[in-house]
Image 1 (tube, rainbow, N blue to C red):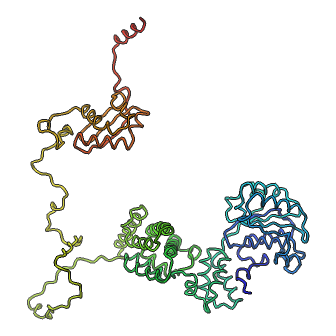
Image 2 (cartoon, helix red, strand yellow; image 1 turned 60 degrees about the horizontal axis):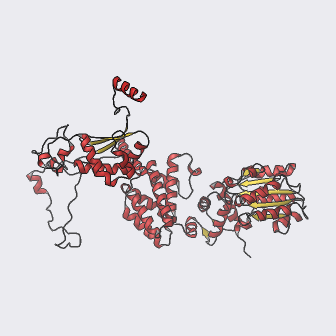
Image 3 (cartoon, rainbow, N blue to C red; image 1 turned 180 degrees about the vertical axis):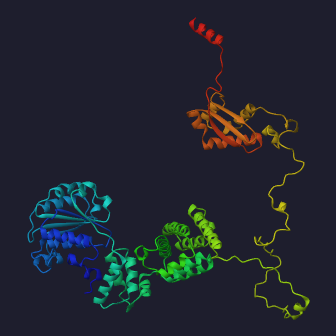
Length: 583
């Protein structure tokens, strides 16, 4: 029966674990010296060796003849644990056994001594999935376990494990494996399995695994159906679009060739490529370009491994860091929309259009990218890297030279354009910035030209005199600012809340002053000011002021100084008030 490669090539000893030497050497030394902990916590992303090392540690703890800290794999304990026939080594999936009842059953079994081995070992995978009550039930036995008991916990989300559990465990962090490390191990497996695997394909698989050895071996197993596993075979097996066509799409968007980019995407879509996968790969390419620009010396350490340095360098010569950041933000936004949209193909097409024409987006990153592109062009012009075409003077021929010129073929072949019916109006010719405009009167392009017979507005003129609907006899009659404010209040009373109407007419609390283009509102500090300085209230007051004055006024709200309107009283009035109070 065929066995999956990731199970067949699962390490059996600490020495076979790839890329986690900082953990395996520590565990081997503990086995040899006997300085063992009662609880271990393995932390790391998927496929980095947490569960594998937990099983190796369980075998090493019970091995009858350990070899330099590694289990021998030959004794009855090692064989029984590997086959799963020894019941004293229990592997629990906390994702499906996360209730307090499961932990209580574990506590009842854990107190009994092991039957066939030296140590009873509980391996709890995805321990962060336990409930709070389950963690509390596990805490006591984890704090003071019997001598024959060892716990090995594994998790991918350390932040979900309570601190009370963390403080009672010996923690080991598993790191993501490097691309070169994974590729080297894949080539070793391919050699043992008689696979024809190219080194470039191995690096591509390692990049797609994102630091997980198990994922990389599973991808190699998926590609094993090809006789010759090269880069194209990997992309075909994964159902990915391929770095060539993705780079062609990005190149077309950089050149603002929207038609070519959409044609390439439609070709990929007809081949069965998922639009979300397409956007994800496009962002991976843009991310690699950005990383290469930011840190040219790092190279493969920061890159995904799916694209060559020559390709990334060629793309980087035509795009700036600010543009790349803007493009990554754009693709990320559309990718989030595509996952929930009824038509992901439409979202991907809109994303391509936005990349080809950055002026369609008005976010800050897009504007910053466009400015950076202009600055790069200006820098190229100043340095001479970009040549500007000089104005060509017309060539003047003499009569003798003109006679020697070859005759012009007046019957030049016309291109086969479709004829436009006469009843359809021809489109107007757009204004070309490069055309000469010296003979055009600039006054024709001004939006507004004042008439000579229009009245001149003085600085102190009342806004009411500008109202076109005002009566002729009242047109130049000056009106007091307080009267205008009263008219504005009367106009807005029907639209204002009752609470506002209760104090807006009280001049000690609210006062308005109308100038030529501004309505200044002075409100008493505190509740009155907070209620007046409300967008909804100010909009209604402004609308009323516009109706009264016939002009769009600016509104400004100020805090009213209590001493400004306080009545002044003489000493005699105060003495009289005092005598009245005494009587």
